[in-house]
Image (cartoon, rainbow, N blue to C red; front, side):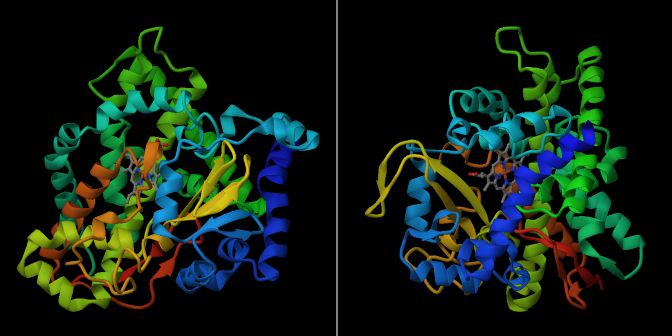
Length: 430
Ligand code: HEM
């Protein structure tokens, strides 16, 4: 029965979209190519320009698409767009397949009730509960422990070989240890989290092949099983952390078991899957712009700007989607209720109307912070402040410890479309 469920889940969420995407990619459709074409995965930016040249909002095989900063911002902030979609409008067999394939023990981060994909009022309820842990003051309180974690990792690196994979030895480790601390999960399980997180990240892309999906689902099941034990432990012996607070909410505020899993799983995954990409992307960009690396060594006050410019120039989350909740006009175009809209965050962040000479990487860019790398509106990244702090401390500490660090060989991109980062980043530390 479970195998049948898995097959149906895969079919409706990935198998059929894959057929459709392959066909639309072959016909040259930009969104199809973004999600399927291997060359585009390596470098999506020329395709983004093709989309931009078609105007602020253009049709694609998957609904409308925008590469425009002002249109993206307007849509993300608009109450007329949501992240949920009306299942009742789907054909009967799709509704059946979604119902039959539904399995809370295998649910991923982009399935309801994950706050990423639910609209108010549920979204407001979840968001209010987690926001408290991410206020500027709460985030700043993490600074000493982030610094300690970075220093310990760098000490380890210093004792090891000169040539390492910076992703596996540092860029992935720092964020996973920080989020483990925040969620009170044992750091001894960090290699499991990294494996599970990679699987969760893959499910963000539609059209996953069956074999990859089955691996991902197995990882998601392990993650849910781990979380069940974690919640039980914290119910018995609560600490002063976010998860203890979530499992111990008073009855009138309490989350259902499914909501609890969705919320904590999202925090755990989003907490490191994206930040590791930011760290890797920054190191590669600064290696290619050695003068700016040297300028940062001479004046570390520039690191905040370097982080913003990396977020803008090579965004760790490349795209998101919205659905029109009503008939609405956007960028002078009628958008019908129920229409899907793909927002190319990575392209909006290179919009020449906002960022002069947008392809230039410049850590001194005054308006880099205008980027939409953390989205906008009610789904604006809850961990943005934490990610900025981690990246600033992580990169500054790395550069100070290994000022001669150089990328050696060709960094290998992760096989992902929604997220953008490196799987392997070979470097010489000294
Ligand atoms: C460089 C690092 C990061 C990037 C680029 C990033 C990016 C994003 C983006 C683009 C969204 C919104 C997607 C949309 O509008 O559809 C988002 C949402 C979210 N992020 Fe992040 N994120 C990062 C780090 C983090 C961290 C460190 C955490 C947690 C500790 C986190 C937790 C979340 C959560 C919970 C949401 C859902 C918010 C909601 O739906 O209201 N993120 N992130």
